[in-house]
Amino acid sequence: MADRTLKPDSGNDLVLQNDDASAKIEIENTSALRITSGDILPVSTGTGAGHDFSVNNSQLVVEGDTGDVGLGTTDPEELLHLNGTEPVIKLVDSAVSGAGFIDFDGSGLQLNTNRNPNTGTSTNVSKTNASIQLFGLNEDANIRFYTTTTNNSSSTERMRILSDGDVEVKTGSLIVNTSGQGIGFGSTLSQHTLDDFETGSWTPVFGTNSGSGVVYSANAGIYGKFTKIGQQVIAEFSASITVSSASGSMTGIVASSLPFTPKSEDIVAYTYGGYLVNSQSSNEQTIAGNTNNPATAGIFYFQNRVSGSGQALQTGDYGGVLIYRS
Image (cartoon, rainbow, N blue to C red):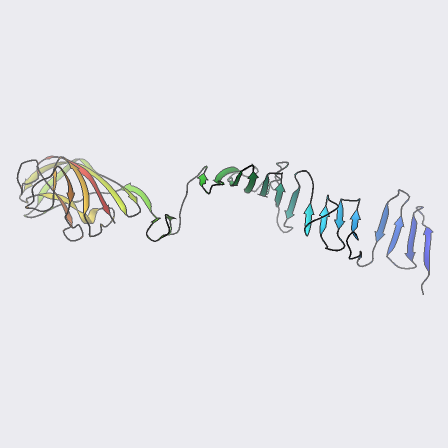
């Protein structure tokens, strides 16, 4: 059996050590206790309640019966239990520069990237900060989302989910990037989904119902704007037209020039400068619901202000609004 020695060393520290072994326990003359292990340092406690391992009473506590670890508490209640003023957990990926933080300040739990929520210090000035904050207040709870495009700066609140389930977009836009996906209303999403919103310009093309046609020029240009909400299309148009010949009976907008192909359904149309009619033999109407089928007939016809039917288009300003489903 090897000799065991308890002796002061040259620094007047009390050392407990097996001869020629690297493991030792030292009580230094500064009152510090140092344990040096050549391999591992196992610490065993009892398995009953109160058989704990602790450092400075509550700085670090390991419960002997449960294995729960406490920092800042003598009675840890979970596998890891932190107790302190606005405690923060810092997570560092050693392979990259930066860190993540988990923080609780009594009413809000925060998840932060690259920015300490207590000090405001960035862990990497070349990266941005994003944050999710969960608040549980008196009769109120909400979840807040923060982002920024600027490195080394605090983030800005973008969206909030309120306690009643309402969602507020604080800054930015709500964008659905996947085609066919959208915002659902009601229980039958396939029938109550807003999956498209578009605005833009279109160029109306004029055609004739019969004869050799109407020869015209657009004095002030041809104008067209549209708004599409789901399947509903609102197409506005106008043109100042000079008619130089009119062997055809009437003219109108060719359906194929519309910004979106109409369904085989009725069109609601409001016009000015001319009258909208359903066919060559129809009487003119100042404000009309067009019962013409745009998928087959293909033209929304106009005639001049002269009473009667089959009148040729005359020089003037023409335009209106077409509302239809695409």
